[in-house]
Length: 283
Image (cartoon, rainbow, N blue to C red; front, side, top):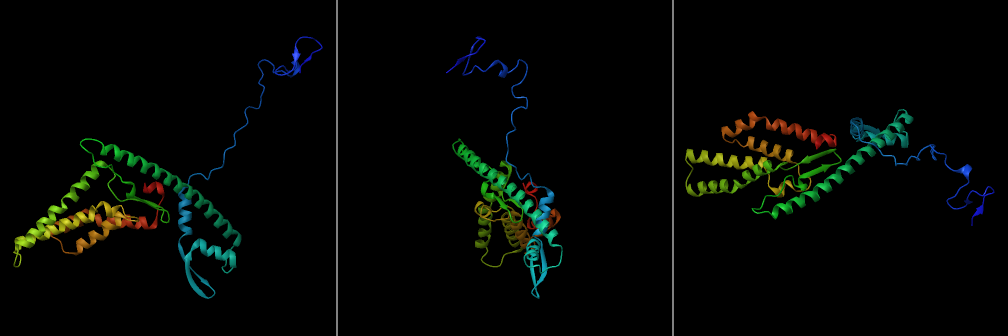
């Protein structure tokens, strides 16, 4: 229902406000602007300090509990201090320390959750690409890097890659793996041919072929091996190369292994993987 203004200029009602309450020309009806949209607070990205803090919290320490020495992580020791007051120290500072570690762990967990989501997307895209290549003629090999060759270790804070990362590397791996049947056939041929003791030339040839076979197995494990859960390519290579070097292979193989320094490099990689590092450094 509308009513007549005394002045008789126009009716006052729906969509017809009184003149004094109308917006004035050139003046905003909302001088304070649109209210700011509330956003949930995020934990933020994990920093180097976060990773260092959590790593230190997981370091092992030896403490005495009820007269007995026990080995446990630093954060567990401080938790005991807070709970039982069995350790000396500033309990208030200990509580603050544990809270700081917890906040750092929350940020790191968020970082891992984001990585897991990225890995799921990568897996989906990888299988899509594999299907496309399978439909081509001539048929193309599957793309590198297979999702199962990406292994995340949250406890150690590392991500490791256990296979070729590019199509060119994948081609190289396949070439070496495809040479294995030929090497085995040659070795079997020498063994079948030599009814008696091998002469010096055949013995040297056989030793070279066996070393070549072991070297391929050490550096380029097959798909089933490298896609197994918790497989670690660096640890695999280090273990097999050490075994090969200790098996008295032909001089040219042993010299190549020593001169390349690959065992020292792998030892460092394995040590770093065991200690843990930032996710971004491992990617």
